[in-house]
Length: 460
Image (cartoon, rainbow, N blue to C red; front, side, top):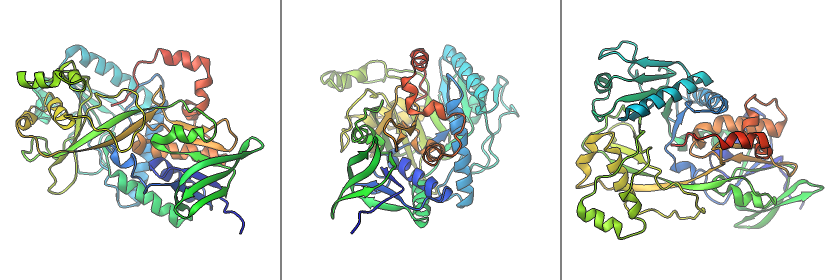
């Protein structure tokens, strides 16, 4: 029997692999797409995210804003066509600070994002009742404002967000943002791709063969044995395993990983309204520990950093519909580079640290200090480039491509990055922002020089 062949083999059935398979099969009509993963679809990292999206990104240019605007367009199209099966909303992101100088920096960053095309910036300095600030209308994304509202009056902040700290001096409500069910988004696309003819193979890619300097075959170890698939195109879409799969091609991809976790718990006191936006605290802080707690933490290498100033960025959003009281809290205070280890190493005290941290923004959470609701902690790895931008395009081995480094924005960016990857594979016209995500950008000395002066990666 002759070996199986495929037009393209995609390694990884996370959101990167599935969205690309969907784009190739459903949009481009490619008939023999093989999606390979040794784990169930969407189960390694894609189901561990915040499931949020935003079109609000800093510079140094407009590439990320343009990419995300396109991705949100595609997500809204898919939500409309599917009856919003993946529960997309547009509640926005609310960034807040109690530090007046940081409020000025917030305004400067917002003006830059607006200039890149993220939408109009509306600045509110007036007192309560400012008619220009629009409250949320409805549960989905339609008829919601775009752009952003920078509220610089504490009384107006308290009028609309009475559960936030009275210390807050500025709040930036970014409007073309929200969240959705990542699992439903992925399964919707996978079902459509399989109906269009793609095949999902459970197995592990163990080798990528080449002939004449280009991809010729992919070897997969599966339960039934080892199989070699003839193909001239291979895509590394392996998420946190992007680098090991790249080594099968003899390549060292310019990526590294950070451990990022989230905690889910029941807000049974109703501290946070169910229609709240994603709440993000912009200020560093020191946690308030008792003397006994401080002594306990100081006795361990893992606990000692919790006694120092903690970074900004703790964030929270409501989770679930109906009668749900769940909230998700995330705080990337342990974002050093690390090896990818499964199962994940879970830091001690993570849930309690997150709950105490968010209390700086939402004081009502201090009520949980003595008895924290039973938390559930999970997470994954943010696999990223040094500029924290996607890696999408052809690799030095002919016929090999990469669709990855979607660090912390895989679900929200995947629609547009999959469209871009598919254009590279099929020879379609590329969007103007394509060079900003091409793997060869790191071989450009001018880009590296520019990158050296770039301080904001926009990572939450």
